[in-house]
Image (tube, rainbow, N blue to C red; front, side):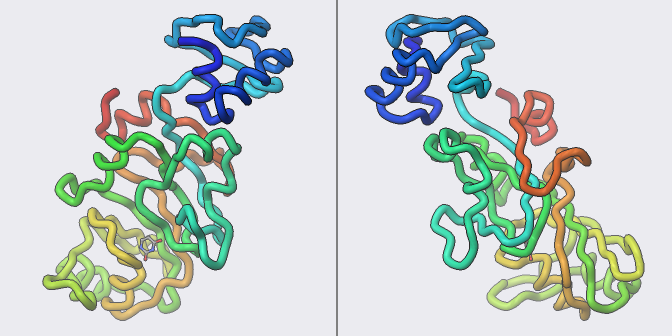
Length: 235
Ligand code: URA
């Protein structure tokens, strides 16, 4: 693929803008300087840099973000900055978007991609991908609440009760809950329906993929092939 096209595909602006970056010696490919916008490269395992920042060639971008509080998951946020503001501009320009949404005050594992198939794979209600949340509660968690969550609670505007796939007491004021749907404020509403109240919410995992302990709030990282496999997605 021509270098100019590679840069454009990765969100570095128009063809003309990418050509200018290359001609101004701001780009390397596989560690070698290249100022020819029309030079052709095999894309397998290609790594390029722009202004010394490294980018792996990727047909689709797929990444995980440790979402901090105070960010909205919308591309057009209303009251807080968008989680997309935590990403480098070229990634945003590629048109990546969050897979599902976490509330502004929820923290934890958020997946972001421009791969429509991956998005569909994880969002499809039919697939019932488990999502594990750790909720800090206002009142002490007890067995009765757990039983209600496991048996199913009726939420407003839902035709039938929704049951947690798993629920356990994780501390006096801590509840670990697994849900397979992605309904609006689902965990907060389920916990309220079970007689408690969520004070803070953190998503620990999606499918078999757990938020890495060393990924700090606000930090992101590419999804590896192994990560995608944990999400049941093969490339
Ligand atoms: N359930 C909620 O209530 N909020 C979230 O952010 C995610 C799941």
